[in-house]
Structures are given as C-alpha cells and as structure tokens.
Image 1 (cartoon, rainbow, N blue to C red):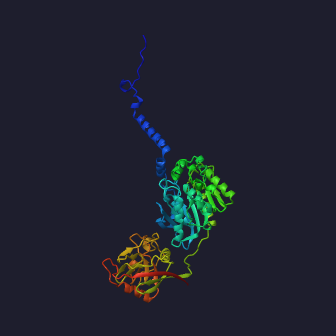
Image 2: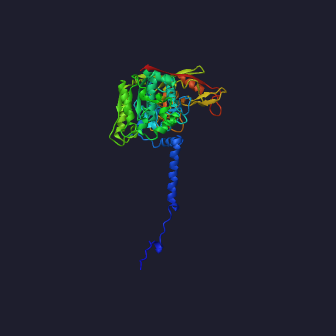
Length: 527
C-alpha cells in the first residue's frame, strides 16, 4: 500500500492554502508604486516639469546648519534690511543686508547668491554663512532671484546686476563702499558668481549678453566660488544628480548643449587675464570636483590671482561641505574665505572718536533751532543708531506726532499726507537693544530731566527704531525704563520744547497745528 502524502499542518490541524500572488495586498502596493515610478521616469523624459518640482521641494531650506558659537556671531552682527526689494523688473527680487553690529563708515560689500539648481533654494539657507562674513567687518547682501523654469536665462544674471546697481545707488544708506565689491555663491549660485566674473571683466561677452554692467571691473575685487559648476561642455559628465534636467529647465532646450546661448554660460571659455581674484573650494566627494579643477586650470593659464581649497580623502566632503559645519574642513574653508576677503579689502575706520564731542542740531518749521549733545559713553548703540538715521536724512520732513501736555514731545516717525493726516514712516534699520537698567543694561545713568532726549519704544524693551522724545520737565519714572542718550545744550532750546508741549492737540495727542522737523545735522568738536 502506498503511503499517503501528509498535508502541511496549520493551527487547528487545518491545511494552509497559499493565496495567489495577485490576491495579496502587498503585491498591488508594489505594483502601484512601481507603476508610479515608471510613469514619472517616462514623464521626465518628455518634460522637466515633474523633476523640477521635486528639485524645488528638495532645495527648500530646512534645519539650516549653524557653526559653533553662532550666538556670538548673531550678537556681533545686525540686519540693516530684511526682504528689501532691489527694484528688479522680475519676480523674487529681494535681499537681506547684514553688517557688523557697530558698523561705521562705508565698508566692503559681499553680494551672495544661493544655490538650488537655479530651480529652488532661498536666501534663508545662506544666512549663517553670510553673518559669519559680516562679523568680520563686511556688509553682506544675501539675495534672492527668480527661479527656473518660470524664469529662464539670463533673468538671474540680470537680477544680480540689478541688485548690485541698487546697492551702489544706496551705498551711503547701507554703509557700502561701492568701489569694493565681492560676489560669492554656492552651487548654482557659484556658477552665477563665476559668470558674473566674466560678465564684468570681458567686454565682448557683456556686449553679447546685451545687459549693461552696473559695476566696473576695477570695483569688482573678487569672486568666491563654492562648489559650483563652470564648464557646460563637461558638466553632464559629472553625473551630478538631475543637473541635465536643471539645465534643460533653465535654458528650455532639452539637450542644453545645443542652446543658442550656451557659450555665454560656459565660464571657463570666457575667462580672460582680467578675471577678478578668485577663491574657489569644493570637496573631494562632490561630483563637481572636476569642475573646480577645470576652473583652477583656466585661472592659472590666464595668470589670474586665485586661492584654492580642494580637500580630498574624506567621504563627508560632499556637495556644499563648506556650510555643513560638521567637519574641520568646513571651518578651514571659512577661515580661508575670510583671509581672502581681508587681504583684498580696505576698511573705513570712521567711528565716533572718544576724543570728540558729538552734537545734533534740530531745525524746526516754527523757526526754532537748538543743539543736543549726544553721549555715546552712556548709550553707544542708541547714539550710533540716531546718527545713522540723521545722516541718512530720515528725520528731515518728519513731524512731532505725540505731545503729552507739559512733559513729552515725541517725533522721528511720522510725516503728513497731502490731506494733513499723520502717516507712519517705515524705519530703515532694525530695532536696537534698549540701553537701560530694566533691560539688564547698567551703563546708562542719564536721568530724564528737562531737556533730555530719549528713545521711544513699544512694550518690547528691544523695539526702539527711529522715534525719540524730549522731556519738557523732570520725569523720574522714565529712568531705567527708556534709553536717554543726550541733552539740549541751552536754556532757550529747553524753553522751545516746553512751549511746544503746550500746543493744542486732538484726542490722540497729535498737534492740531503740526510742527515739522526740517533737518537734523550731526557735528563733532574736540573735547
């Protein structure tokens, strides 16, 4: 008798029956995911739209890395402007401007352009890097620009040129030496910075691009190239992820090498002996490493002064290693960048001289004029802030908008409309630290007596910007609560303020007959 074949046993001695594959849930999950991937791959061969969207999402700044001791760097810098329009004809033409905390005079400018395949990215990702440069004495403009594929070449170069034109036009306002400018950028921004170097030093190229340069070659002191690409003939060979798709979106030509203007984008082909001094870095594990080597070779062959830092031998030194701040090499790259900038810069050491007295002369529409002595020894940041507003003409034409009868005359922040309405004026600098004891500052011992000028603020102790007030009488309750920083020098000047605090006002404490501040001028005398 033949032995019976035993059936596989299952729980409860019931034979287990295998389900057909197509009845298993995970099978269809795999099928659907595979189908979506295949569809996306096929779609990407026909259009750059889907991968471009992916690039934009991937390049959105998240968890931006900061260096060791970043709190000190923040305390050593200030924001002169945030999301400031540089008057571009195209979209996204905004910038942030950083400077040393106590910036004085006009200092060298670094214009920084972010990376992101020209398709994504944002200036916010570059803020820590830019502040590190600002702490060393530079004014740094961190710019955004219109993104591909909506904005094709040469939009981004045109916007960089517009940003530089705006900064030079407003150089005095933002403490910029318009004859000492550096251009820096990372990844795609490195390519844009490198191309700007050719644009501003190669007249033949500038004529071909048909954009009028806003900067002469002598004023461009250097370019800083961080992990960029520079040779469009060979960049496909780097196999950098999605670089071909990005250049397709940027030029609107699928095989971008056939783009009619591709020669303008090829930096190494347009470098001349007049190319600006260059600092270039790239990590050994970066696919663009060979691009950096090509750029170095062409700089060397043209006799251009350059400094290179191309570290190898560490798998961590991938794309954008210089801003990850998790390796020793990232700090070396920053140190070398700063050394490069310092060696090519002359700094304006203009600053309030401790051996000088500082006076501000107020001229009013009433015909009154009086002088105020400022005291930086008690409130240095407050005095420096007031001088900045005064020397930039911000106060000229403003009105005294708040009067407390017999005690306070406040101004520095409002103008009048054609209908005579009070209009608040937007401050041009960031708020300052309140230099008074309630805010933990112990160095200001000035009392709010008749004739004192002090800074107005909101409930936040560090909210003072442009507005100030005069005391027409002693107000001891303000001591330690507001930053007093100067004193009217004559009895006639104090009497003028006292007279103005007796003017008739509306229910909002605004004078019915407005008094305009014609001008505030600063002068210095020997002590």
